[in-house]
Image 1 (tube, helix red, strand yellow):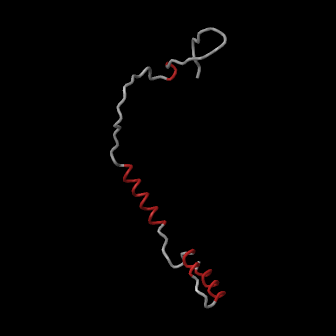
Image 2 (cartoon, one colour):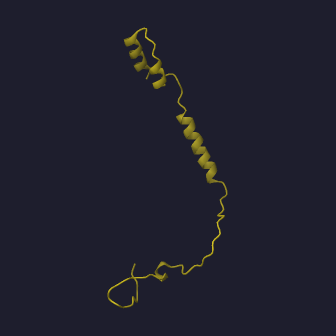
Length: 86
């Protein structure tokens, strides 16, 4: 980037380059790395915080197995499904 600045300053000799300094951060340190590290550290700290579920609801478990859950099947032909292959 410094090579580009020297080429541009050599081409415009004596003219002030305020736009070049504000667009291209040649001699300035970027804060992107600092922000990235701070976000990663924050996420790691957040990962180890205790989490509890604070929502209560009424409900009941019908079955633990997928194949035992009641499923409705609309069909034109009347009948009953004896075994369900998933």
